[in-house]
Structures are given as structure tokens and as C-alpha cells.
Length: 231
Image (cartoon, rainbow, N blue to C red; front, side):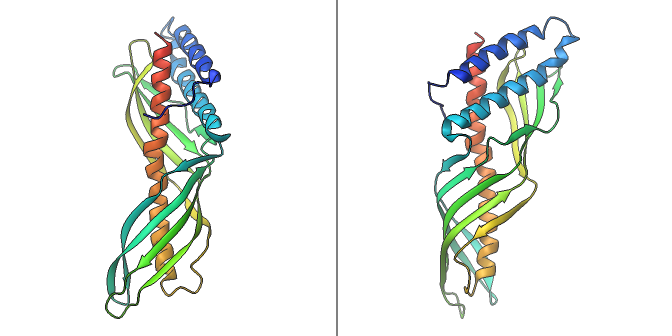
């Protein structure tokens, strides 16, 4: 489980304040309509402050990744190897709610959408096409930067009897627009266009995987913290 530094007093204070504010919204059913918006504000505030702890909200270092993809060249299909290394993602703190959350009081499920306005993934890549039939082997190496703008996350929280989050029921990231801001190392390559297309898919999928794994884990830690501080 991902854990932030213990020195982040701001996060703990925000979470404790959130519990008090949430409690105040439960006095009457009329005031209960404030629960989703208040809860969302607290979760996003904690999330942004956590990213600031990680590096001013600008960058999160990620693990290298290796994969294989199919590429058809001159009538021959080969499995090419792709590696992304020295990877980081930027601008995670540029996140907002898409709309006010929708709370189903019968199931205690809170439906939420958030939007990352301009995620940037930077990586060094290595890509190799093996010799197949008459198609010669070729390799390329360079640096790429992909902008995912925007990226939406659809999520569902389950709330307990005190209207506090106790579980993430569903979480799905979706990139609504993406392009390479820059990519080096492909000029003059025989398979340059094919390499670019493969790198586009691999990089885009890695951004989605990061949001669905590492970023989701941060949210889970924040929910655990809010629930813990309310006891």
C-alpha cells in the first residue's frame, strides 16, 4: 500500500476537519445534499496536497516497463520489443471535479467524475524490430513526451452509515485526447512510422495503467486516513 510521509500535518488536519463538516451535514435530510460535494472537496484537497508532498505536484517517478507489440512491415508481421525507462508523469495536481457527485442513499454509493486537465508522461524508449523474411532488423532509441489532455476518471465510492467512504467500488480512467508533444530518434528510420504508432499505443496505455494503479492507490490511502481519523 502506498503511504505518504508522516510529516504532512496539512493532510491530517484537512481530514479531521472534513469529518466534522461531514457530520454537520447529517443533521437533517435537507442538509444531507451537502455530503457529496463536501466529501469530494476533502478527497481532492488531500490528493493535491499529497502530490505536493511528492514533488510540488509536478512530477511522479514511475517504474520502467517492457512489452511486446505486433508490427506488420512489407507483408511480414513480427513481435517487436518496447521498453520505457526513466519514466515520470507530470501535472497530476491539475485535477478538478467534472460535476457534483451523485449520492444514491439507498445503496450508499457516491458516483464521481474527476478530470486531469493536462497529464504529461516523459520517458526514454528503446524499440527493436527483429529481422523477419526480407524485412531487416532495426532499432531506435530516443525520448518521448506524450500529453493526455484531458483524462477522466469515473469512480464509485461506498459510504458507511456515517456517510464516510469505506471502499472504492469502481474506478476507470479514460483518456479523451492525446498526442506526442515531442519524440526523438525516429528520423531516417525505415520503420519510423510504425515505431511511432506502437510507441503511441504503449505510452497511452501506460498512462491509463498509472491512473488505474498508482493514482488509485493514493486515493485509497486518503479514504483510509479519513475513516481512521473519524474514529
